[in-house]
Figure 1: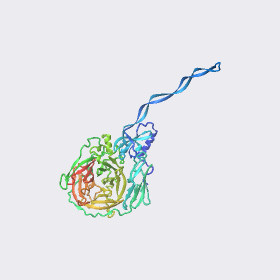
Figure 2: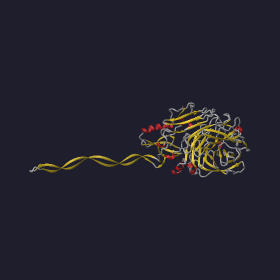
Figure 3: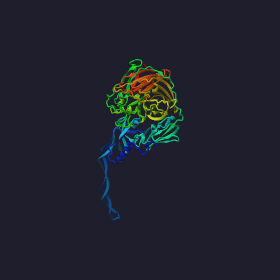
Figure 4: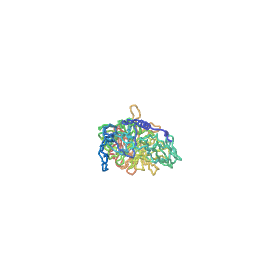
Length: 627
């Protein structure tokens, strides 16, 4: 059973419940009930969004009715006497009578009524946006929440627009049989979202997770071991929200065992120095930009150094400035905050997918964040960074929001192994501080139509045995069944290129090239004598030698070459996958004077090559790279 699963509520849910009780007993409904800032999950039903909701005093003519006793007369014939002939004589007399009549009148009466502001749009327009709220008002017994959408304050919407008491999880999880996996699969990775009765996102730790299986079980910390084959049904429950996921540990324990037997191609590189990330640019990449002049022109950087000696062998130029943030001010917890600190990018045609982790989170073992989708057909270079502010007109802002989708809070790992195809986005969610352990590697597939996870696999790649694993911190998805991955074999001073192919739920790995060099291996020493190169997964055992981490890897299909990024360096290496180049051969390198802004992710589509810079976050196109 999941730890802390029973009888536990998030602070947001507890506060919302207490606020509900207070609201129910209060007679003054004109004031907003404040809650913690929470993420709201939009449902499938659409409701009107209003700019405001106020309880206003109005004067109305009210019809009143009163009863009065009214006197009236009637004429009546009365017999007087009989004539000599025996006939009765009559005379007419007046008789007074009374009756009750209803009198209608009108008078001016002051009363309070709810008044909606301007109709803005339908909540369906925010179905895939990042929606948050921290207050609501009660009208006719119904809650209307004031919402922020992708960081911008918008207006009020009926809470029925949210997904109330819903659990959305991955339907199928397929794990490789790995007898050496010391960790297992974290069941929380299968959660897209779980909401409470008001549509607020519930913290994953508050979700009760149980495992029904004859052979598998879930630990107290929520992990399922993949050391033996079996199947299980995972049940996720919170309040009335409930969903299930089928988990399978595949049967072949030898799956993923291969050989690293490619002879590396030697290079003749001079000593190349670089700098550490902690000495790089530190301009804000997450604070809201509120000035139209904050970004008003493109950056362009020329390569100042190349292997061929061509001082202008390539240049990079801005094509898109990312939103400053996509979450409301005060979003302190990581589930609520959608940072603009991008770690990885990928293009497919005009679709751009990014992995966004809050600053400093990429090095965490269970690093989580959000993936963001942009329809680049609608991108305007200089406006999108203003999305969180109210500088843009509402209609302009709305046209941008309709072309952005934000994933639920999900596992991303280091976040630089991102790829996409026509229908899906992928992330290989590995930890960049694993020191090449023999545990399984997690591949997550996300539907681009909803930006929700729809399938999870794990696989392993070993060179002969678990003693020589290959953990990939950088990979490029080629199609829905293939990815190319980069491994730095620091002890043998080489880079290896691996092709991982999926057939059904099983994976095969093959080394398809190797470069006999560390590419960048020198140390830059500061005034204190300390090593400025960022250490981590690439430190060589029993050695003082360290190497900067790879910050982008991609295969360019048009020219059959790999590109590898380090800080502000870009290396071009033959892939040899279709015979156009020699596999593993260093073809060129380029150094760009970016002001110590480090590359964060590479992408290629057709002949084009793209890279990302943070501080502030922007995507740039690489030109003249064929030289």
